[in-house]
Amino acid sequence: MPSVSSRANRGWWDGNADDYQVEHGDFLRDTGFVWCPEGVDEDEAGLLGEVRGRRVLEVGCGAAQCARWLVTRGAQVAAFDLSHRQLRHARRIDLDTGVRVPVVQADAEALPFADACFDLACSAFGALPFVADPLAVLREVRRVLRPGGRFVFSVSHPIRWAFPDDPGPRGLTSDRSYFDRSPYVERDDDGTLTYVEHHRTMGDWVGLVVASGLSLTGLLEPEWPQGHERVWGGWSPLRGRHLPGTAIFSVNLA
Ligand SMILES: C[S@@+](CC[C@H](N)C(=O)[O-])C[C@H]1O[C@@H](n2cnc3c(N)ncnc32)[C@H](O)[C@@H]1O
Image (cartoon, rainbow, N blue to C red; front, side, top):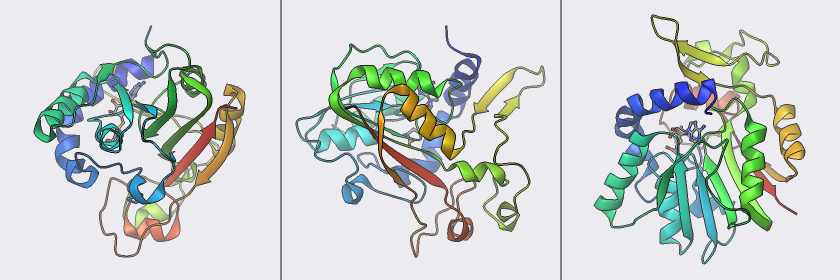
């Protein structure tokens, strides 16, 4: 059974996928691999290492831009997302670019893949910020990775939760506790949950990785690049000069 968070988020992403792709598609690029609003590009970052000939899974792929980059670099790729509408955009871009990504609709808390069938897994803000049970996701990714495999995932930097989600000066003054794990939720007029994002502290993330049986091998806190003026929600050059916006975890399966 999908969790309450997954049910709400599936509806939200189905309803908002069109606007999301209009707003962010150019920045993400149809065959690009952008890890975060700071613009960290896998072409330069190389966080996944060599991908040619590797079997790679993209978790919460949206329109599968990252997966398509992987295909162009010679990887064997599968990708999945909770939202059917996001996957329709994946298919649209496949047809536009001629670079096809096999995708499946699935919830990251229960993966429809066999044990030990991928060498690498990746996720650029896909699924993990939205799920109620991130340990289930990490355990599922661990299950489908072969020994020696690696998972790299980006999420909102935990410190952001202590500040208003505002790209301007208001976003620079903390107004809540970093230790308050209450999720951010939106509801419709009937009180039904329509969107959920979950907060974990940095210590929570490390604990989850350890509990899943994976080993933390790297943590990147990208700095806002000089001359990068693009605002994405609460991410902006102003805030980026003061606060980290993204955390990118690299974890391995021994
Ligand atoms: C911010 S988008 C990131 C997608 C893509 N990497 C990008 O940069 O556009 C988050 C994605 O996570 C997906 N998602 C949310 N919860 C999920 C879940 N439980 N399982 C799988 N995907 C999920 C959403 O449908 C959405 O496409």
